[in-house]
Length: 146
Image (cartoon, rainbow, N blue to C red; front, top):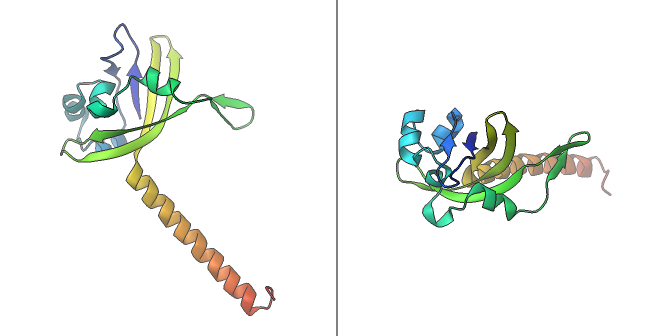
């Protein structure tokens, strides 16, 4: 997770401590490498051609998501490309939310590499359809499917 603090300048944001998974996504061993790579800004996290301020990115997306028992979570979907410390270009996606706190408004951003997400979905689909196929064969052998 990464958080972006809104302040007097919308273009250079102070990034708060980030999760190990985000460091790995960018190919960084520690927060110092991440800060060097991104300039501690959301702008620095995104390839220049894909960059739009989070406030703009979230306005392009309609409506909040409802989840849980009468709980409104105002997360929005985002998608853009990044360049890792090693120079690899990755397409990432995730959700973003504006949180209010004593210090002001803070954007929290959860990101995942799209390729990794698709690989997990493919694996899960393969497991699911393999189980369905086994059940269908068992039902056929038992005469349950006529």
